[in-house]
Each structure stands twice: as C-alpha cells, then as structure tokens.
Length: 51
Image (cartoon, rainbow, N blue to C red):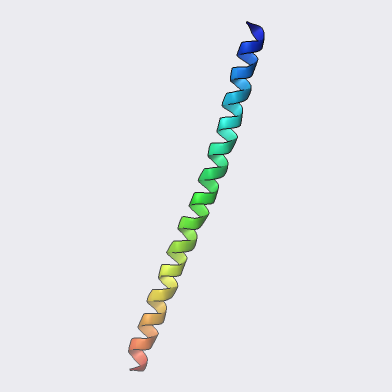
C-alpha cells in the first residue's frame, strides 16, 4: 500500500512538471506571435507614411 501512494505522488509531481513546461513553451510562442504582430503593425504604419 505504501509503495502505491509513493508512485501516485511521483506521478502527480511528474505531470505537474510536464504541464508547467508545456505552459511555458506555449506562453513564449504566444508572446512571440504578439510581438511579431506589433512589429508588422509598425511596419505598415511607416509604409503608409512614406506613400
């Protein structure tokens, strides 16, 4: 019985680490995409001003 409890705790800890890692990766891609959109908006504004 004691070993089953330890295996469940280790499993929960492993899942916690994996979910945290995935959250960080997805969040970084979202921030990167937002920055890319902002850069494109600035480029379009400068192109319109030049015309």
